[in-house]
Length: 121
Image 1 (spheres, rainbow, N blue to C red):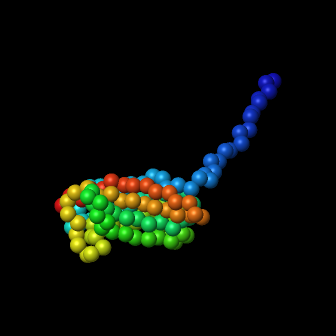
Image 2 (spheres, rainbow, N blue to C red):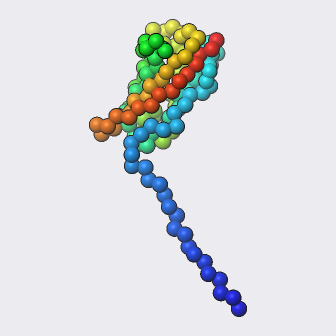
Image 3 (cartoon, rainbow, N blue to C red):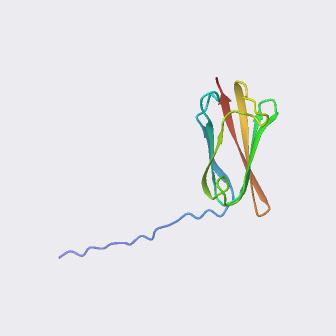
């Protein structure tokens, strides 16, 4: 007769209490605004108000969208915002690099992230 011993393991969970933006990317990258959109994707650790700005490499602000806390684009977890390569003046942007800045605000705290994108037609 042999005694079997078993040890029960208690599952552990990682609770994220810090407010941040993670896993930022866009795809496709590069993209051609004449026949596709790119999706700006990010994760939030808490519901938040989110602003996304797209700038040219020379610093000109070309596009802006706002997403409110708890609504699509501002929820805890995965979020995605499409950009069709058209600026806020209705013009298709030219070939080249662009930078998307993501700014999230929650309870007086602000966090940010950036994504490098490339337009190729």
